[in-house]
Length: 81
Picture 1 (cartoon, rainbow, N blue to C red):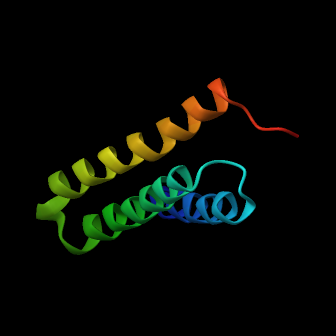
Picture 2 (cartoon, rainbow, N blue to C red):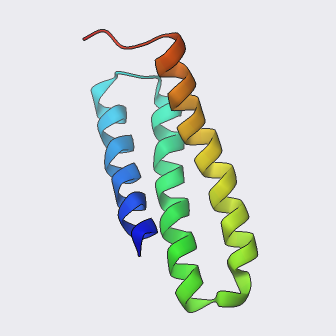
């Protein structure tokens, strides 16, 4: 259940980053994709328990790509406050 809330958090964060022009848009899209992947993984665990290996792999790839790119961007470039 916690993955659902974290997926929703990623969706909101990605939307705010996309609309705010604080980071490049491809990073915001990656965060949104990670949010959808978290939601897909959580719903697949309940509906299709046999497919959890594939959905966890999809979630892992999207989460690492989106969240790690945001982390590296903020550490290297930063944001003007």
